Length: 452
Image (cartoon, rainbow, N blue to C red; front, side):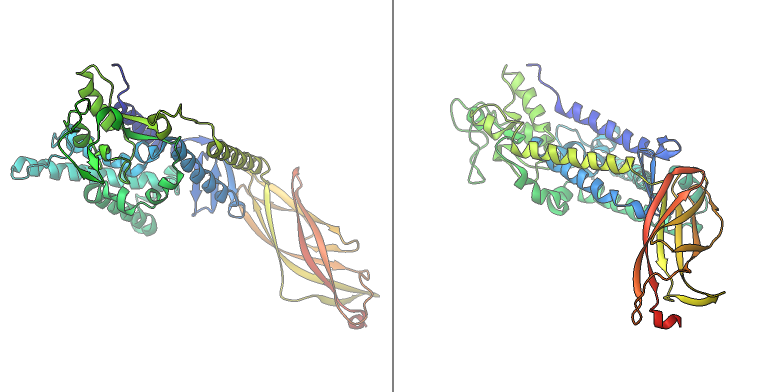
């Protein structure tokens, strides 16, 4: 029977994911990266749009989208993320199947349970060589991770002078050491013991979730209360041959015929192994990627159900919100802080002038320089004393300006208490009036008794 080879498709998906992860940091739109979270430049770049530190409100939405997406995939396809897309799983496949298996022939993919005979010196040499290759790849993987925090064009300059960038070098070293320990020593134990996701994934399953299921009705019962009852099922019509091909190929060392287990990552290699054996008997695989509903003969799997529709709606809303906020990105940022002195009173001719100082922190988030100034929208009578002219800020640069607001007219007639006003300030780029923001600042006007 011509059924799909899941392990070949899985390797293709992993190769694509690996290539994409390496390529994304190098892809730019208008000289900005598809994704870059730069703590050095205090900037987030997303799909060619740059966001300043004060615009990091997008990050929670991106994280929510990521988590909900993985949860939605789990609800529909079980732990397919763990077996097909998780970096830890991909790294293990590279080390175990590619380096140890294909390159050095220490074991076969179809028999991962067979222990390597290290009494042979050649196997020790192969093991050491495989380990050294992975050490090099671990540092490459750690560097690849850092490219999402430090752009590659800067990374390759920084590593030429490692002593000047100890934080970067330290981060890469720590990540690489973890990957070496995780992939070569922990292996699949990480999935079952350490990974927090495995602890919550079972709560996302329902009768329409598709996952790796052994067809006990055809194959026969092999476990009773978790205890194996024989080499093969005892029924005369039971199709399972007891060859244990599904057990030998399993990367997490479980017997899928026991039922759904915490360690199963939905890699479906057991299905491939069973298919090869059953094909010789002109029968289909006893292990399938299906739902409990379909396996019990209760009808077809319902992919459109309340859970999946709810996830689709939430993901659409979050994606729409992110796109809307990205499109409404301001070309400048402005933060206003009042100085410690409440106000200053001075006599200018026959008029009492009340003034107050503020710190205006401007950030030009556009990709070209602009000339900035501002105006007081309200209250009427409040004016700008300094600076008296516009000032230039380069692309992506910041500028701190000491601004003095004043009033020569009486803003409040309270004779005993100071009055507090909300001053509405509009800042803008003189050479592009489409770039403007409005902010509020507190202006305190003294009691009339203090003016006498």
